[in-house]
Length: 387
Picture 1 (cartoon, rainbow, N blue to C red):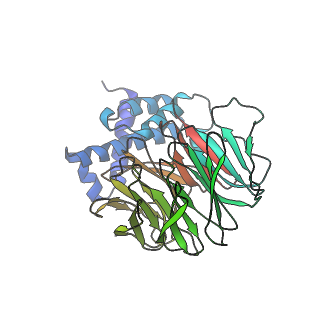
Picture 2: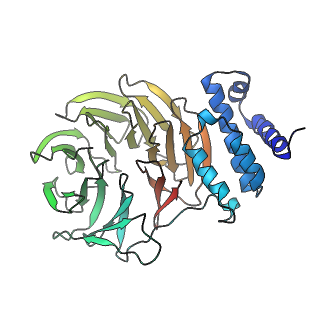
Picture 3: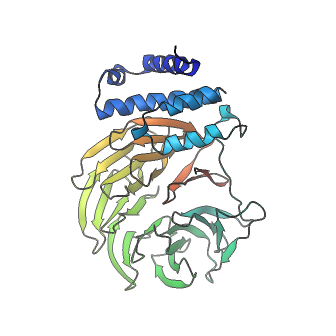
């Protein structure tokens, strides 16, 4: 005889199937990888919906019935939430952690994915550091002072956490040793605010938005290499491949991939208006793109070698405001002004799970060990953490 949880599982899956387009529902009859992924998406969504309705035991049973080889970060997130009995209100979504914030006004907090620390970019020109691992209580912020005392517009750590760069409202980029906090170099990009920048893994290359566009810099030689992208009044994006060979810029319709060594254009990839968020997969094989525009609202994945579209999805109701990959590259995660977090299977593009956040979110990041997924609300950063 079937258990109550199994019966509930079957009923929810059947109801979900009735709501799917025919092209998705036929996936249930096949055995291909795409079919299995679609079935897994139905299962894990059903488990989450059961938990939201307050039936925790059934939700746990349904979650454990999912296809084990297909489980990813969304499974870890739900497993952590379901086991935290009595924490939060399931109807309001998964409880998240809000780290302490400094008293000084700040633009946002850059995330060190290697060491799991935050660098608050403050209007007084200081960087205020916070370790996420510290015990609850008064926040002992480490303050890094900049004698320029200009309002900070942007900042980013290298992927290994060894280098940190900030951009201010007067076009200055300052590069720091992120262990000793000794200033390494200063770059002048013009007189306009530096709105976004990126540092490669080894801290030898930097790309920054400036008055005359996005420029590539040799940090060791302290020299400008080339202009690799345009400056748009609505903003843009820049990111390095993990191995450091390529740097991508975006803004309007096109993502430009350039050689990090000399700035030479390697490839152009067409996407959609307002390509505001770009991110290479951990293995460098794919480039993810998210559009901020009110019309496209697209999350796409492209093959870096060929430029071919791997998938291009548009289920978000508002513009994309952040992207992150899981460390193993099997999940692309997106946040949007529609107040949802969505998990996508790589490379099929199947949407696996939609998690309500309760407010608009932006600047999504994941730690290198896969334990922390961090984003920003208007009042500051918050994050999910799994064991």
